[in-house]
Amino acid sequence: MKRLHTDLETTPILAWVWNLYPNYISIDQIEQDWMILCWASKWHGEEEVMYAAQWLEKDKSNESGQKLNKANEFAIVEKLWYLLNEADIVVAHNAEKFDVKKINAKFFEYGLTPPHPYKVVDTLKTSRKCFGLTSHKLDYITQLKGYGHKLKTDFDTWLLAMSGDKETREHMLEYNIHDVVLLEDIYTDMIPWHKGHLIPAGGMTCKCGSTNLKKDGTTRLTAGLYQTYRCRDCGSWLRDSTNLMPKETRTTTLRNIV
Image (cartoon, rainbow, N blue to C red; front, side):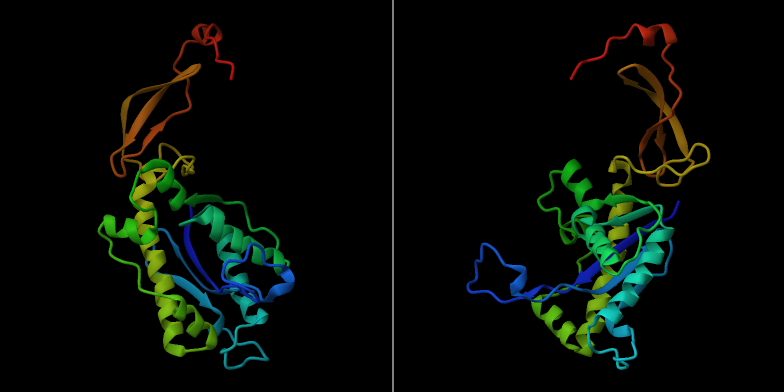
């Protein structure tokens, strides 16, 4: 089971406005739409962090690689497509509302077909659903768990990176890569809490990949009784698919009508 941790950095939308609190911005007011600046990804459990940035690409009209343009963006988007095409699970913080939708938007824009189907695990969604934390931001959670801070950035970081400042672009990539490393740490700690997580195929295996399971009681569903297991490594609870309830009991059990 291949799990890909990924994180995007995108540019803001540049638009003409009449005041600081517009209720609506027409598409005619857009001067420059958003683009993907760079991305970083990491296969779960591996040391290497893969990354791509527009300024590291060199198309024929932009040999220096300094200017942001569609040719350079397509090059880094295509590289990301090949990674997602290999993944069974894609992990990101705010994956469902930001990263995955932004990635899909660029695939659609550049005429790339959907990659091989994968399961999305959103650590932000899991945090909001399971925990009453003071904040669900990645920076807060990583500090809470003792993994340290995200690297510091502000709006000027994006402006300078977009304008071609070499030092800022290096910092942007470092920031992007560091986020993916922190993401993997938090995802790993949250594995027992993720609902609907894929289970590796092949025998008695936990969603974390461990086979170190212990029988621990049973769990009762509406018309079924199942053996439960506890993972000795990550603490996840799992159940098998064999219904232990006698058939005659199942056929006489009433169901609720919702």
